[in-house]
Image 1 (spheres, rainbow, N blue to C red):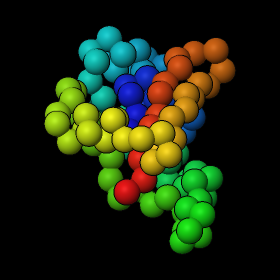
Image 2 (image 1 turned 90 degrees about the vertical axis):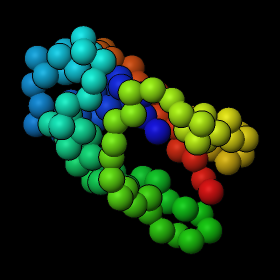
Image 3 (image 1 turned 135 degrees about the vertical axis):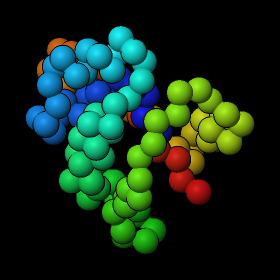
Image 4 (image 1 turned 45 degrees about the vertical axis):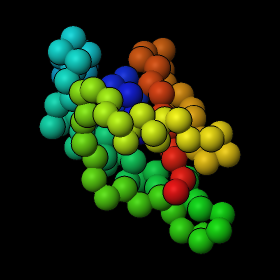
Amino acid sequence: MLDLHAICVFAQASSSISQGDIQQVIQSQLASKGGLDACHNVLDRSALTFLDSQTRKSLRLKNISFVPSAFDKLKTLYDKNVDKRVDFTCQLNDSLQGKVTLVGF
């Protein structure tokens, strides 16, 4: 799960989206298709970074979606115990700082 700023950070890392597009996403508080596609591309390329220690398989991203507000199942994922999730921040240069949560099942 990525917050809107994390989506923008990863999208910027792909170099396929302009700073103006990023500013539009931040101002509108809505992720654009171009931003989501660029973010997805970066996450696909970095999948080997997240290796499951039990299965020895890398994180496989099936799809990416923007959820503008939390719903019950999403809240449940955020409430997972610390040993079932990884929380970290991401930042590119001195720009936005995003928050990422990976949840194991």
